[in-house]
Amino acid sequence: MGDLLKLKGKNIVVMGVANERSLAWGVAKALFAVGANVIFTYRKERSLAKLEKMLSANAYEAKLITQCDVNEDESIHSAFTKIGEGVGTIHGVVHSLAFAHAEDLKNDFIETTRSGYAFAQDTSAYSLIATAKEARPYMTDGGSIVTMSYLGAERVLPGYNVMGVAKAALEASVKYLASDLGKDNIRVNAISAGAIRTLSAKGISSFNTILSKIEETAPLKRNVTQEEVADMTIAILSNLSRGVTGEIVYVDGGYNIMG
Image 1: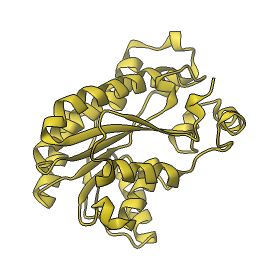
Image 2: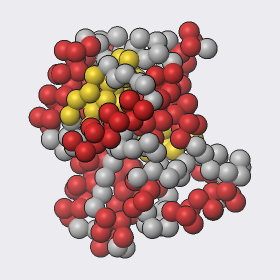
Image 3: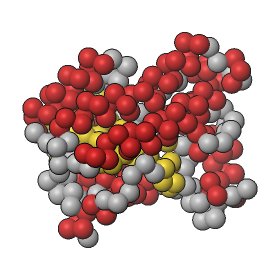
């Protein structure tokens, strides 16, 4: 199977590991398992300390770790310059980060502030465009860019609010980027993951209700795991999905198809 994936020795950038429950961490573990070179970006020193602890606890060795604040063009530019100089070619990028102010998730959507709206869009959607732009010069062999979305992009989910609008923009950005980068043989896709207890999920007040509703409604009658999301991400990063771009791939036990 590993031969089919063609990820052994490939340089994959993983952005957005906050803790062990992060989707990005699940993807990183799966990448280590298939022999990829994993490069991490982190935002704050706190995340770096946590990441280094997780790596050493699992006896993983990162190819490279660099600071990157996706709200700053200069920071993204210098991170990818450092990665490019360090590894030469980038074969894949996992963009697994989003953020909105807590009050914009707690209040009714109509109360969203102008600055809160702009911040959620900048961090959660524009950051993919900026990342793709900086990664592109080093993706000289083509490759795959994958981002993480959620059903709230498409439907109203209580408490998701401004993040749902940001994810809708993210999913539209995936399609426009796929169109731009196809000629470079760079594929751009999103994984729309089912509800999983991550750090991001803590911000959504109705999260427990959502989990039990999924168990009741989803065709598979259960919630999905970090590993299941990671496995599909690996497939989308790999040679197996070489004919797939601009897609939103649901890993949610089929929940999104139900009325």
